[in-house]
Length: 460
Image 1: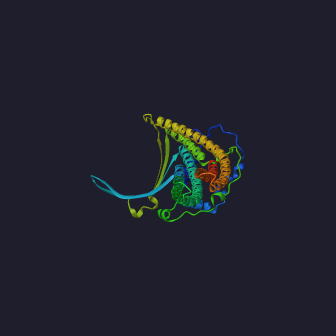
Image 2: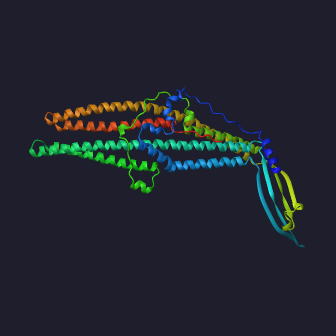
Image 3: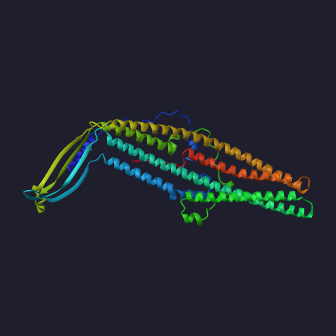
């Protein structure tokens, strides 16, 4: 045990020198942001509860538990955590036990039986910080992998919410189509009766019939889209093949009943760098690449290893562990590069070029982060205005249809005018449902762009 303590002390004493640059966050030309408290609704872990739909809440919980992409991301975190342990083990002495027994001989005859048993300890002095940089790199890679998992989690929860809203929108549009088909069928009945009585032409009858069939085709198209949306949502929820085929996706609130958060500030939050997991991933990858430069530079310097062994050796197995059979040995070894054909220099250049590549990726990720956040803020504001415009248009078209229908019943206008108003009303109602869905999606996109739902975890 004294030997192990000695080697451990050597590890502590040689921990002062570390080659390679220490990491410093790159400078970035960032905008002056708003106070982060203005966006607290988007930094809650379960940000989707703002919509106040229990079915959506249950779907999100199911996806977080069973989605296969998230399970794979969690497994990658476990791999990275194990890599940190492996890297840290390089800084500690290694101890192994072993034993042999056998007979040796030569041309003169057989020799004596020799038996050995003992412990061997070895330790490589980390004079240049090679293993400290390796652990630094592994730890940064772990944090990057955890942030990447959080990105998967954030993307997953956003996709579940948006697919759910798409499903509700299609439900609403199918309802509109069904009501329209019923109204058109009534028109066909009326004009069929008028045609048979000689009060309407075949041209008018055919127009009404064609109009009805057009809406039926639109309804069938919507049902196909709904079916695809339901299966896509089932995949996000981690449903089995049997469940995808046999089970139905449940609904909660109607599209127009979902809660919308109040208008949010127009400025970008100043701590966007700390919010978004993709930015965290990019920076931790940069930290790892920076540490790898230090690892590469240590290849210019010699490796110094210490070894020690203690145990027993005897010509008789029965007396192997007797007091007089004890043996020990101490040793040191040095390995230094002399000629590597430019390999070490090339490895250093490779590590530095890798850092520059990841630095460019970090700056690009940062650029896209602020772009997406700004786009999401603008969309959140504009889609609310678009919805209000479509709502006003729909109200006006419904009134216009009522008046036009009365004029057509009184024979003041022809069927062509009525069909034109009906088509505009149908389009307006469909657009209103789409606008409502876009309004909800914009809130989801804003939560995602601001890193909503992501919570950091400290790694010890």
